Image 1: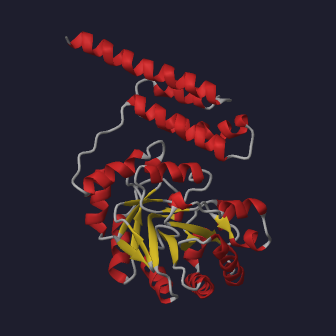
Image 2 (image 1 turned 45 degrees about the horizontal axis):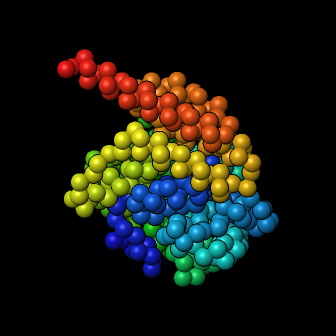
Length: 335
């Protein structure tokens, strides 16, 4: 176990905050398979202050998702302080501040990874959040730097620690890398060596082997997984088994399709929209569950045409049949 403030978290792996991906259905599915901790999708501090209804919906936390943080983004200390006070009514276990998002619409308002260029402002935003949060711990997610010419994660981490943050998550890529290339785990290690608060490592963890390697290489207190969980909530079970010296049995194609359909049903049930619109949002998830299989490219293309749950069921049946037929044919060839 590790402690972030007064919050205890299993030292296995947690789910990264991913806008338009890690919604409640996604988080619940990952928690079901052993995710130790999760963070909400990004919430605008200014939007919260102006009572944006959609923003408020993002802050709701169910018991099955705990421990969970609400993640805020913004560039103004006063708005951040007010937003923290507002989100406290949703009883988050932790409040997280996004200083790592690379997308232009966030960066262009001086938020997200843009704050990597203004360490003083990053510190003031953190301090204002900490003062408003009371006993709720505040954490900050950063990148290794704005660009390869300005790797300053250690400097900003020290400032964030001094401002009262209870933990720091470090994505080992710069802003100009976005999600390309490789994460630099040495930066995560440097941050861990430089501060006394827990450090969460993020970047390029896709299975139990890479999770163990990150722990060993960086000395981080907790591993955070983003894209490695796409269509693969099982990764959390795999990691938990490895770290507890238990046997892990990978899911069969039948189990993957069953979980995919369960995930789609959950998206439909939790969505206020019509089934067709909810399934539209589920399309990318269904495609991710089929990655890595024989003939999956054709089926993934069909996923992006789904309009109903019954269509998803039929697609899953055909996908399972394709895999089993291929297995049968290969067995006959080799016998």
